[in-house]
Image (cartoon, rainbow, N blue to C red; front, top):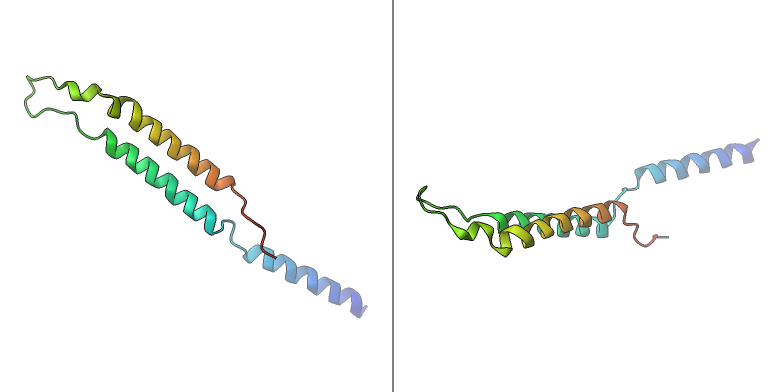
Length: 93
């Protein structure tokens, strides 16, 4: 009876230790920050291209940086965020 009670306590101790563990590790948070930086950089690169005078058309609105590079960076940032969520680092013993 005492052995069964001891086994029961160790099982509950293991469960509580597993429940207290953080779902994300340090690597996950670093990858999340990299993804956020990519998304922010993409949106920063989209800024601009307007004109102060409404009668003047500014061709800078359709350059490579705003039309191609910035959306690619934003999408890459979202992909990095997904990777950060699913990333499993090394198991600590």
